[in-house]
Length: 106
Image (cartoon, rainbow, N blue to C red):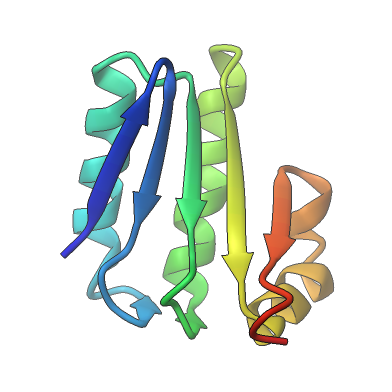
């Protein structure tokens, strides 16, 4: 189950499962869009429980970043595992929006 916590204009979204993959992206996209529609200008994606992000998940992050950037908003990713951080660095995603790891899991 995806959870969304709002504080002012920031929405923190936590995917419920361990994967952000093609099968889970549509629901995650809908929750992110809903948060923006309800006034969030910043989306924080908390990957505390996530172990796998596939190309569909990466596409979602890039699309969300681009959409938010156009309207003056921003996307941040927090608590990414070491493997996900390595993937983001390899793909240079961390150069487009804020990405932080979870040192407790490294």
